Length: 499
Image 1 (tube, helix red, strand yellow):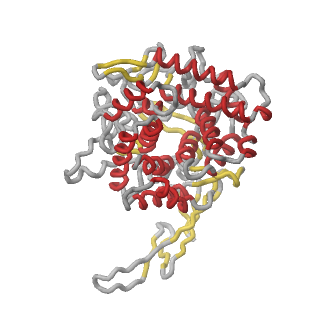
Image 2 (cartoon, rainbow, N blue to C red):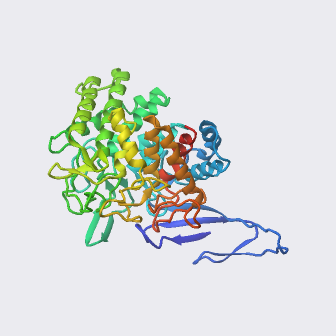
Image 3 (cartoon, rainbow, N blue to C red):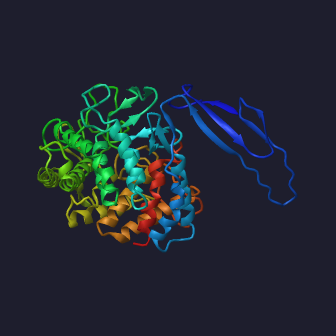
């Protein structure tokens, strides 16, 4: 029995891990440093294998190991759906789905509703956005993670206003931890309570996933049980998401110590003008408006299909279909900007409602949503496939022409696996199969360079085929690996391969 205390990162010293060693012939000689010695003999030039199996259990705390059975067993199904792909694709499929098995957890209060933890080692807990997007990427294979994630997040849906935790009635959480978080970086202290709701998009993604799971064939009874939570989420969208009434969803941290940015690019310096200057909030992100459009349209379908199960007469299919139409019109009028290369959607609107003209990967999340016209989708796709945005391995978070670009800047030049996977999925849905396949091949090459375990993010430095050392992306030193939405990205990557 080995007892190991956490030595770094958030939660250091707050938990104990128990690991049970199971390996024939192994002797634990130092439990404090976890030193294990094997007594073995091997003939010259003859392989000799030893193996260690660890069963790890967290003692104390509010999270436990969880299970969806075996997601790894779906690897053959994924390859079947993908069609003709390289033999190496099996390595990507099996590694990614096995990693998702290892990242599956459950809350102590809901052991029968597992979820996909965000990533190891830094975010090994429940994050709303991460779990929702990962479950959505898995829908072509199974709806089970989606339904479970929807249930556990619904159980924690906010029912009151609380500025400190950013809670608002109907809102879906951002993150759940055993202890509060306090981090000081760059002169700014971020202090978050253990249950924190500072996310502008988790609630929209929850609605979108509910609709997606239903369309993927989830049992009607399980979807029906979540309709009351759908109505609460829609009430949040109607009552709280648009604080100034301009028709767009924006976020702002009034406490001064919560998350300054509350979309998926949640670092403090992620929202940039083309000059490189940081935009001032409140911020209305372009992709969030697209998520709202999709959530409203999906909600309209769900409300119509489950009309006998709704309780709030204010939420009607017609109302939310009209909301989506109005959002598309407003977005077209306010978000599009132009540079020497032509028009494209701005990254965001700032506090003064000016379009923030930084060309960023966020625009790619609008593809396939139905909010853009065919011509607009063509413009976005061409922009993203240009050398300023596409590194050859994936889509950079920020254009190389931006004044703040740096290939290993967290949200301002790096490539995030899930971001690129969501973009190529949108390209496929929008009918740009060739571009989607090219992006999929880039991520596949990146996966090969990372031994088939795609990291959370990696460098945005350009790929130079045929040059020694340039066929493997430069790693980002503090990237989670394995990471949930990066692992789930194997599904759209392989499905887009032969499109």
